[in-house]
Image (tube, rainbow, N blue to C red):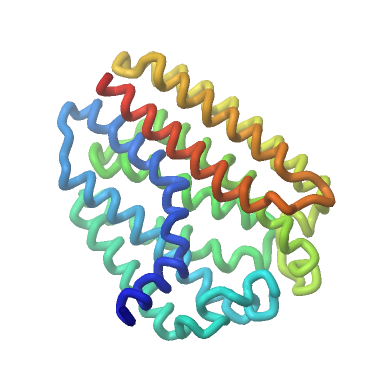
Length: 292
């Protein structure tokens, strides 16, 4: 039981369930690549999943490790595993190194291009944790880290670049940056006192919510174009993908109805539940559309 409890603490440390945000887009990038190559490799699929899980686990654990002293001073985050003493800083650091090594190993088994780009990907996803110390654009760096998922999954199969995975990566970047700005509203006053950088600190609550809406409008426009281009390039996709895209955009709009100035009580519903459902619904419906 003690071993299971220890494992569960590490799952909680990295919020393993949140891997679901970008994972469906990574799978979509992977299946687009299999359509181009005409063959489905289960080994490559497992390696892509490994890259996703290990890179995100390294990034999240590093964020918790680096921010442990800040988290201790913030009432909202003081209960996290490291400041609460459930996981030691040394154990968290070793967990980061382990996941970085496993990510590099999976990338190396995919193809030489993925191995060459793997350190760049790690630099982005780990470097995000430093950004709120010097730039209010930190939300966009987080978005960029998750935006690598569909692009990287496509490269894993083809070792070549294509427009459609990059468009989906841009969708993820704008989507994640927008909802991370909403999530950061919870810490606006704390970040201001600690002289940390964020969009809410820079623009205030009203300005941050407006920017979040603008980013999600841009996200919606690019998603619509990506779906149009996908229909032109891949006749395998039919009406189900349009349904998935419509559901994603509907939930994108819905989350903005949950949060307003003076009422942040439903931020977690907007951030976790709504975005998780939106991503899974769009990704899985689109993949299912290939085989229906």
